[in-house]
Image (cartoon, rainbow over all chains, first blue to last red; front, side, top):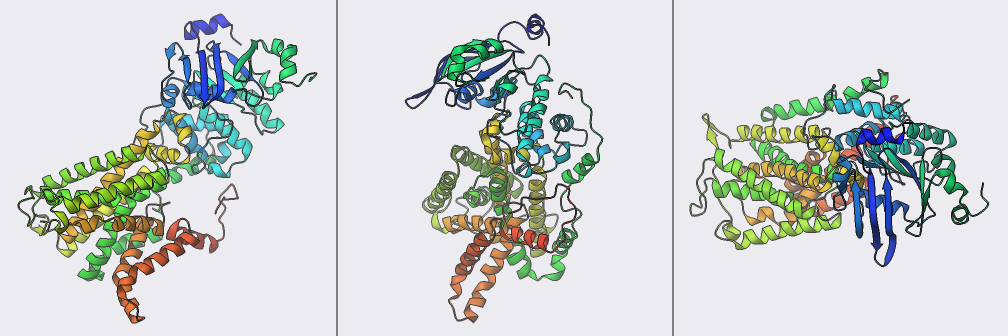
Length: 260
Length: 360
């Protein structure tokens, strides 16, 4: 892994993602309260917390699926608080969904092709891609990277759960991502599939930072360098993985105490 | 394995299957060729009545329903205003072109009036679509139906442009190169050419980035936004394309009947287009044409059949309604769905890899 200094100089100084005082209300319910988080370019961070801690709402605010009620979000220095989701995505932000959000009526290849097309020109093109279409090749490579080449002409509705989760990740890695939000990518995966997931995450190019929501500590702590612990919509604690893991308050809250 | 690897294309047998998946569908289907040849030599087989009243009318209605199929099948947007857009184009041909109502018609030659009508109808449909895309599901149906109903009552009451309930009569049709293009055989070929063009365009676009993205929007609009697509812009663009197709059908329709009146854009006619599309099937572009053929055959011959059974001949709608119920009840994807299931059950499943198809 590259040094922090190397990574900063590669992308330019400043934060990849900077949230200041982000609050999100659903009616009277505050799903997020005054969340301030700064993530460096290339940094890999886990967000932990029990159900209802506000982890997925945090993602929805960052991507703009649900804009924050107050506060600002900066992506590589640019204020994207009021941008629609697609504008943020075109700037290099990506995300996966906790419950696979795929296109069941289309083939695996078409799903990935759409992801590649979404962040390039020609989204409205009336011309079919030819044999040497660059995006088709990019899609082929992504399909291969997540081990789905054998089923690439199958409709997504016919895929097994684990394959759908892998496709979910492929969609988030299309184009040139600068920062990815992984929402429980390991949910429902078998131990073998978890191992493959860890391989995919650790083999991402160093300049791609990510935040991962993951309940499985074995997965989470192996693929991140920092941890944010959330509780009741607030940032509860931040630190290195081993600090968080050994923190008695965190253990009390999250691991149910005395959990190894 | 690394995602950072540069572009290495896997040379595998699986990739060779891809060109056929992307090529023109149906090109290796003998039934499609037979239908194409039959349509081309139809003037040799059919008399003027069948040529125009059955086949040309089927193709015109089918093209209108095709525009709905494009929106509903690929975009998940059920628009009830496709006939209204066609009717608007028809009115514009009459208003800008030549008709017996000289106080209204501007007398432009057809080659000016038709592009004008197509452009205005496309704008009309796009604006309607821009309203409709703010809603989903049943509310899209309601808004587009409201636009259709509003246009119907407006044409009834507006005398300055739409000539009220009498409409515009004796609309001129094109004559050039020494051919009367409204004569039965030339007109049949004009209609066939336009319908075929629209059919292949829809079929082609369904596999182009625009059409694929539209299907993505249908399946999961939120994810499409998270992939960098402006979902509403895509939907409005789909309305623009569908409006153009509907407008083409509208121009043909006004040439076919040589007149246009509010009766042609009534609410029940709007719903007929929905029935045609659903009966035929909205999963593939051929569906609307099959639906239109069934509709036109019933409309034309049900009268005689019903009278034979001692029933009121005007009840042909009862037959259509019962047929509609039966189709919706037994096959959610229309006649083509029935046909596909029948073929599937009468053919040993030839080894498409992957085994289980989630068919239902």
